[in-house]
Length: 95
Image 1 (cartoon, rainbow, N blue to C red):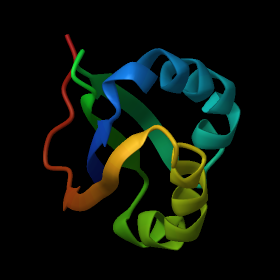
Image 2: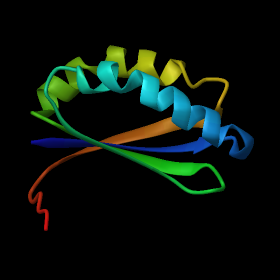
Image 3: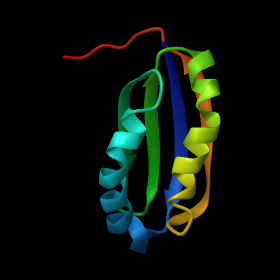
Image 4: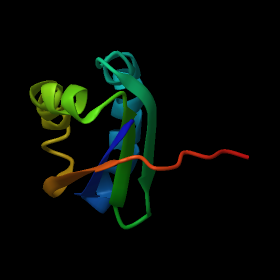
């Protein structure tokens, strides 16, 4: 499994609108090939982080264009471009 972790900065006055848009986009996000789990976090100042658990690094890399198109729908909401990175998952525990 592979984790794509993306840090982002929303404009603080756009957070609620961005959350509403995110809810509308759930089918497209969860429909990405290999998507296993999606977690999106945000603070009141608009700083946030997405953790997307995907089947493999190869599948994540193949989704790059589709992910960029999804982020493009937040262009007016973002204070800066998102900063993606990726890691091999060595543990994925839940209580």
